Image (cartoon, protein in one colour):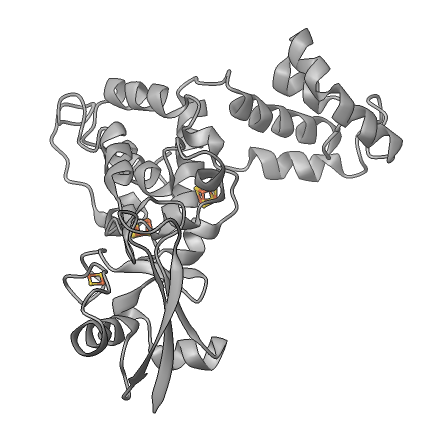
Length: 317
Ligand code: SF4
Ligand code: SF4
Ligand code: FES
């Protein structure tokens, strides 16, 4: 069967904008998108540019946008894409600078990885002075990352602010927070860096990084664990930390969120910042979204409190 492959092409040195070209190729059973790209390059257009190496979903170099979603070309079945979308549309990873066609510049990705200090800090022994080799489960699979960049391309926060450290780098940072061989002081220093603007509190929890990751790393879950670790380490003054703690306090007190008090919990008595959120508060009030700040707790609030005080499961932090 011959299928059309729509490939986004762009040479920034020669062209002002990207364009699409369609190549028709006879495909056979079991072919992947990477197989097709290699054949297109060998048989139809030697200028088509893309990266690959292992062809086995190990090296992470063939991540691209296939039918609108970030995927590894070497493990994406042409048949399944065609059955699902009725087309094979191949473009570079989004929100990363294009070097040529499907090859993007990963320099920013790597500099963010370096920015989270991806090695053990402090002395490499436990707090008891005994060397400990952690079991794999303690990392919650973040060590399975192949650094493909798919999660960063899909990240809504990175789309809005490309200074955001991003899901891959933050998942990498969690790997060291989870590692019992890193000293407590080193973990605290690491969290102090991660809680700054462009760090853990800039994630919008959209879950796209989890959806596109080919290795089930679940970067958003790692970021949530980093937030929990930061709060437990005493980093409680960022807007994000105050929001989490304020939310929990209100639910513990009333059994539900109280939107009338929440802004005070987040920004405190900071008049300028209160004035900034005032228009939103007024709009919510007019729509009937602001409850009486003095309303009594809901019926059965003690059940909610029991949930909140139940120990959390599933992780070292
Ligand atoms: S959950 Fe957070 S890190 Fe993941 S894609 Fe969304 S904003 Fe980015
Ligand atoms: S977390 Fe997943 S999607 Fe992100 S770089 Fe690692 S393997 Fe790729
Ligand atoms: S070629 Fe290595 S992950 Fe696809």
